[in-house]
Length: 413
Image 1 (cartoon, one colour):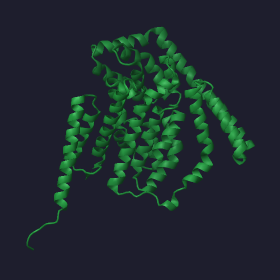
Image 2 (cartoon, one colour; image 1 turned 30 degrees about the horizontal axis):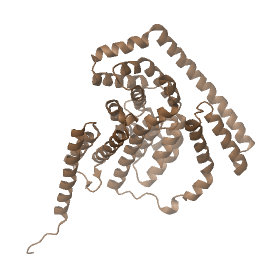
Image 3 (cartoon, helix red, strand yellow; image 1 turned 180 degrees about the horizontal axis):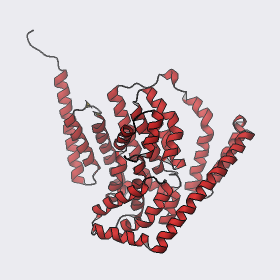
Image 4 (cartoon, one colour; image 1 turned 180 degrees about the vertical axis):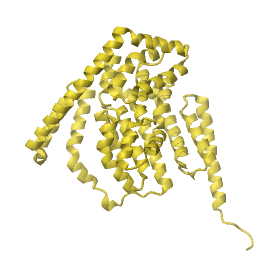
């Protein structure tokens, strides 16, 4: 629930750091109370908050800007971002689950957990509002008006069914907050507009793309590595929206010119632009989470790096395998998801020293497990089939060793 709650809020806010401060004040103490170490809870919150920027249906404001750049519908962007986002959060969940299994965490007692029915009674208005938002965005295609309609519906529902929560002071506070936020957004957009204008007028955007292509020599992988590094550096200390706009202007054209699917190219720079929030030595989201958890910044940053491993490899994978961004036949997309899910399970097991059936893993098993997981995620039939065979051998050998070690000894005493 900590992962899901942080992801949903970050998807709305579009800011990993502010999301850590907001939801982290609740989720980090809850995870620590359940038995997770402070550094692990902080790292998990930082990764979940950062990944929310990539999660449909809102993705902050970035999805709307990306749709405008690519001249496609908002629904197309959300559909393309859905599978990579699912894989990212699935990896977070599997690692936290394996950690809990290895550490024998049992969670909070039922007496301390709120009833699901009580939560729904208090929060159904927000669920209905979210449903209307999805309806306006995907079915009516009213992207510009959807937020206003949804807010109006929420206010009406609160007035009709729950008057106690909407007082005069609340309304005045709502107006005051909007008045503070809107000038901040306008200031950011003015600055971004000046940067965009200077890049276009001076020709830097076009020259940067051509320079990157020349350095890569027409080869895809070196271009992706340079693009990832450039996105990471430009993303340091910059909020997601201006970072994406600058990268979309100066880097995305180079990626598209070499033959990459436009949506895959834009999602590639989006992923690598936000990675700096959880990557040392900067790792702003991790540092903020560490402060809330009262733990080491360095240790939290290193665990954030490990927990968010999918964010580092999935952009390369969906460039080479567009099925991961929803481009291809149903069978291709389905097989890509299945192979990626199995790969994430094995990599997560190797990282956390625990795997289904096998249980606790030794060092050799961990290395083997991670290697098999990587092979599952590579979009190549022969490599995938080899990974299946190796996975069966790993599980079979581990079960055999476990059976022999647990078998009662026979003979004369």
